[in-house]
Length: 304
Image 1: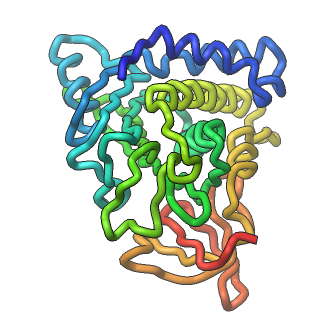
Image 2: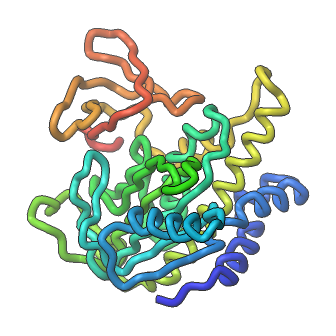
């Protein structure tokens, strides 16, 4: 793969022609694009890494040791990972043929907005995969599935820069693109884009599509913060949640919930809604409602 920040800017500039962008006035579209422009300002590509997130930390250490401020929007991409991991330190199968990257963002958002960042990352992944011809859906918060098989996953963590201690969000993204061989424990639960479409995709093209989508959606998140700060306690439109719901099949599903649901499932419920803060509102089997803001779910029904 060969990546250039100039090409990312070029990709981002064409986001304005998308159907979503057309919902906004030209001046607002320009503002959203400017907000998202730093995404991919530095792109580092490796054939093989342990974890992209660890490399982000090393880059930041180099910058700060030289007295420089690390760049918000830094992206690390690897063709393959040796120690890829997901939530709860689960091993993430990341061989050649997939897209494995990490993105670092300065923690400048107010809390009401920063909690929506995992939704933003999921939206960008889902839009990218759908552009490739696979109608994937988002499972709360940001797993990407199609026909009950996982295609992509997102991991959002926070970190402090090694020297100055500045706070950053680090978003790890893995998309199964052409990697058709999976470990035995993933048989029947994971699939790649090629497995559904029957065609080999260009990983570099998928990466550019994804970075463009991240730029637009993170820019939109900044704009949403601007709107929230203007109206205060008045009603404000949650652009992010609205789009997430359009791409998700979670509401109405019967699920099993747990903080680490694979090891410690806690209860079963039916999802009633996702509230404005991103919380999962569920109806328990005894008729009471509960809202969870962390954890994960497994679907235990078939999509209707």
